[in-house]
Length: 101
Image 1 (spheres, one colour):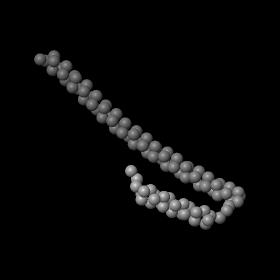
Image 2 (spheres, rainbow, N blue to C red; image 1 turned 60 degrees about the horizontal axis):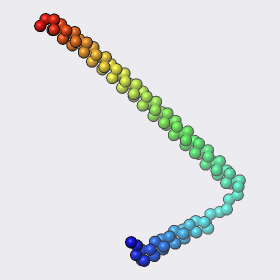
Image 3 (cartoon, helix red, strand yellow; image 1 turned 60 degrees about the vertical axis):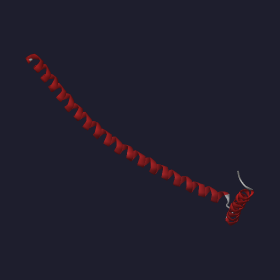
Image 4 (cartoon, rainbow, N blue to C red; image 1 turned 90 degrees about the horizontal axis):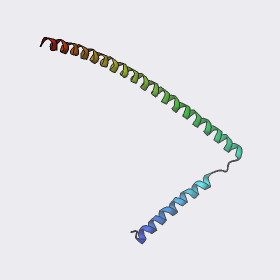
């Protein structure tokens, strides 16, 4: 449970925060709609370029991952082929030994 002192400290912190925003509001200059439109257009352009950069990087990373996966699949395919060939040899050897014994 909060004590009266804790509640008072919380109210004081809130008042100090409001003071910071008041100072910020006073320091801001009014802008007209043309300046605002230009600023928004520049922001939109910057965001568009950043998104394009991110998408390009993702495509690059996907391509690298695809290449690595293809190499891994190729390697595993060769290993599986070798195992299957060895298995076939062992089956033939087992069958030959069954006939002898």
